[in-house]
Length: 277
Image (tube, rainbow, N blue to C red; front, side, top):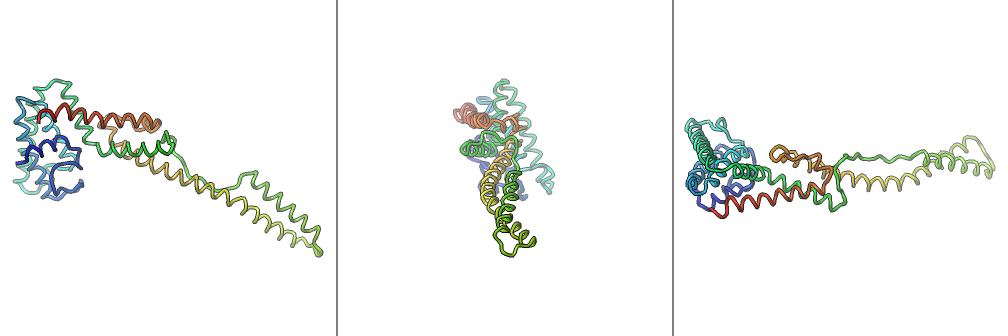
């Protein structure tokens, strides 16, 4: 039987990282033994949760609704088990969870039920919320206030003005060289013009390439942050009705909203769990 401390840890845990079983890998791909261990512990945790049904039904409701979140986080379902006995035990735990949800929900008002649902949604994607906030804060520290529109890497190339310098400069050098040459020939002039053009082109391209290296480094950094942000924000979207595009367009707003989610988790846990367990 799990201890009261484990039960409290279960109620407060973000999933799957904080799930209170030693030895459970932080991975969605679990072996049968780990799945059995999770389901067995869930059955015991639900037994403890039933003890709060009369005096603190919101605790029972939180624990029984969270059972579904645990199964989703670890991708556990009836088909995960091969033995008939394991499937039957899983079905019994599912039935116990459903019964406890029904009996405890009827004892809670709608505001409490909504608060529990929001807490579970925040806990279910809390790692993504933290990563998203970390990414936004890093962007703001580097002066990035929006992830829209996306940026593309630039290529080093001379513009019309640069090519004008190359052409005019090389022709002038060729003309001057021909004036002072003792044995002037068209072929020699062309060679001088070509070499001069190459040297001028290289001289103009070097600072341009150096500048582009710096710009492309900044663009790569921007795009990496942007990709990380959207990967995290997309997971938050459905559970918390968050709009990644609107958040990406205004990172100051996004940071405030994400911090509010973290604060809401602490407030909900303080009201729903800590004073009564």
